[in-house]
Length: 374
Length: 262
Image 1 (cartoon, rainbow over the protein chains, first blue to last red):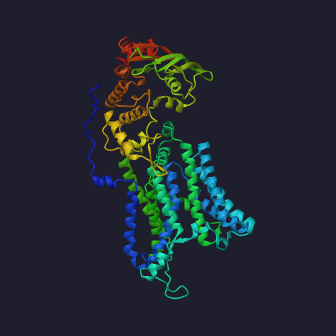
Image 2: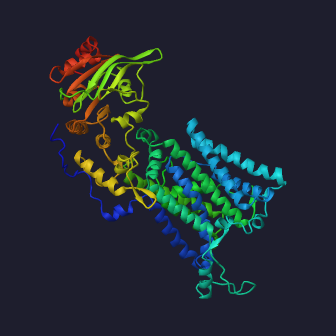
């Protein structure tokens, strides 16, 4: 048997050398990066004079992208852990409605309403996960059930209590609250005032706010998106728990054999997805000042599309939070950019479908190179 | 094998019943440190039940397990693993989509502290993985190479190296060579030889007599839930082993009609 393999094996002659450039490029986010460059190039060429790239335009698509990013982070980590959550959109509507009911109808302080909603929604996310783990059913079915259950309550409760499907007055209720600005406020206002004074960004030229910059700060929504993306990325790639997420989605049985607490990981990821949906909902409710029964429709698919454009594998075990964030950016830029470019809005879907298909084909190719999948 | 040593694990008169089915009807096996103990048997002979009892998956209906001379009652596989009994399964060993070093440390991730936070120590994991793979004779392109790009034999070797690195005293290999080609089988057998020389007891389950003869020190044959005895290397011929596994005469007549050893 000796002589077959020595202690210092010769390099395998069948393994081709890989150039450093190729190695640097071959990563799960490549599809998202290529897509981002392509999308920005396209709109710089065709919509540069439409106001898409002035301060207001940038803020416009940044907000939309940030919304996608917030839910994409949760969806991405959950998908890598091997599960889906189709109830994200309904959860957004439900969370918003609960805040409105707690704060406006019941008159609770807004911060208590927000925290209670977080606890409630994360518990529902945990329940999703618990049912999936206990029954062994596909998460697709379990969360599809919750898509309808939560949406049903979101429509039923306000009708029962207030005889309408939109509850307003949250802005007034949130006046002076300490927690509400964390979701609905803005930061760096003085910087933007300074930029406006210095003439670097456009200011109002008439009216009561003359001289003030049109964009007067960065909404907390964008801050939340960036924070969640960074935390999600660090959690996934730099921690022990991140390794467990990959393992749970890659092969749950093999992971269990190695002592990874797969059930715990999956349930926690369902809870994280619910947390992200609730962050989305709170930011939205604080911005609009109202909660509507139709909020968050189809958001689950938009989150999944962003994640898949970002290079994650639908069957789990592979993906990247940064990729998902790029996917969300592409999604937001395309959606708003077509509006700026004056393209008929129904064509947005055509565009999105093409990007989705192109990105997924590219990602599948890259993934095969990396993982040796066949 | 070093017969002066005391056995690291003694399985005494193990019986295992599943309802009305008697899977094991009194099997006794001793395993010594540094030996490769081959457990042979045809499909359904009780090999899997026996090693699952040894690794804590099943509790024996009757009989005792002595680990380093002390009676042990494993509540679950984790107990057995922490005692130093590691099992490398034929299939469920590695996650193809993950890198070698992530697989190597799966469930045992090294951490480094940065302030109050703890992070996966990738530098340490990568270094150790490359070192251990080199010892086993596998040349990785890099520690971040995905396991999916490795061959079946290399994957088994990674799994074995992982078990050894994390302090296995008894290594149970469940049919590691059954799905492999000739050269890959040779590599895995060479790995078994290396592991044995480090003083680790190897329990090698196979139904291939030639693979067993290549590395085994002692051979125990199971047939229909019973052991047909343990033989030393050199005391038994491959043909005798084959006969014992198959249960005797039928196979002889079959081989006659097929014109050779099966």
